Length: 280
Image (cartoon, rainbow, N blue to C red; front, side):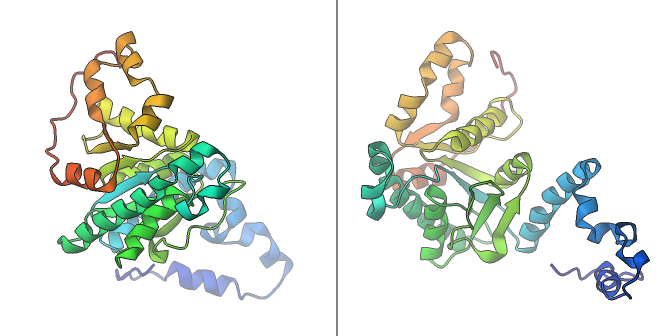
């Protein structure tokens, strides 16, 4: 990352390189002697958590600003959704049946990336979690048409490398789930949710809660696959019970395919912010 601002002070990177070449003595080997900003053990101390949170917020923000990313289209969805060509080897029959959403996510990402490439500025850039399944399909769809896409990964015990379709310069890795989710939504012009598991549900409900409570402006909020979502979540029961308001059911739409989703986004008319939120 280049910083073109001029300063009369000595460059921190230069001092870091200089400090790594000092003579080897008991004093220079001491952890106390390390430059604080170049000392990983120090930065990982419990007391430094506020600093790490700030750094994890700042780094992706600065990189995306440098790449002039103005707005994004968010794709959430399951890492276990297989490619249709691999559906026969899926863990369950249901996963095999859901494999067509891989192609829908890929097609949707291609259509939105074409729109992005035709727009002035870097608008409607696809952003995913950077992993396999639906996430891979989204990044792959952007690459299919020669566009760029963002991947927001996170360190997990079982996690593998980012999928090969994320634009390398826009591929990020996170420690904090909360900061990662904030970056998903900071530039969001639309949120698209494909079938998935706990992680997808977490992302769905946090995003929906922010809109419901007026903490985030309304954007197209699209759930791919009505039958899947109505099977696992009884939306009407929440309204009937009074734990959400009936109008909360209007915060999202069901779609079945990429073309339908693109049409809704293209014809979207922003609703006024949510002010009065009874029954939250």
